[in-house]
Image 1 (cartoon, rainbow, N blue to C red):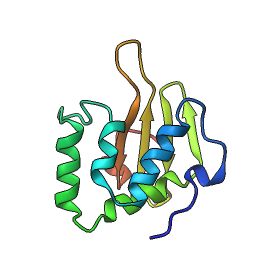
Image 2 (spheres, helix red, strand yellow; image 1 turned 60 degrees about the vertical axis):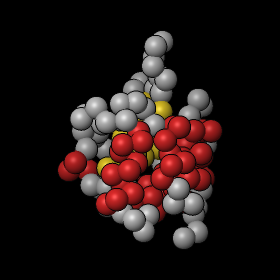
Image 3 (tube, rainbow, N blue to C red; image 1 turned 30 degrees about the vertical axis):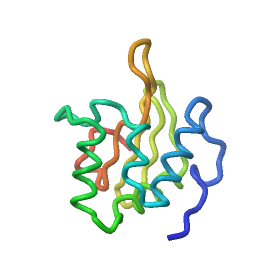
Length: 122
C-alpha cells in the first residue's frame, strides 16, 4: 500500500515530528514490532506493555490492515493541545501521542480503529 505524507503534508508539531514519521514509516511497512520503541509503557488501561499490545494487534490483524488504518490516520491533519498530538480519521480511527513528563517519556499513547473504543475526543 503506498503511503502519503504524515500530517497530510502540513508541518508536524515540534518535538513530535521525528516520532510521528517513524511510527508512520513502521505502519506503512506493516511492521508491528517497529512501533514498540515509540509506544508509552504501559500502553493501555489494562496495563499491558507495548510488546503485549503489538502481539494482540498482530494476532487480530495478521494481514496488517490495522497498520494501514494507522498510517492513513497519521496522514490527516494533526491537532495539538497541552496533552500532546491527536490525529482523527472521519471513519473514526484515532491516533494519539502523549507529551512526556519529567519522569515518563512521551510517545504513541493510543490507537483505536473506532472512536467508540477511545477515550480521546476528536
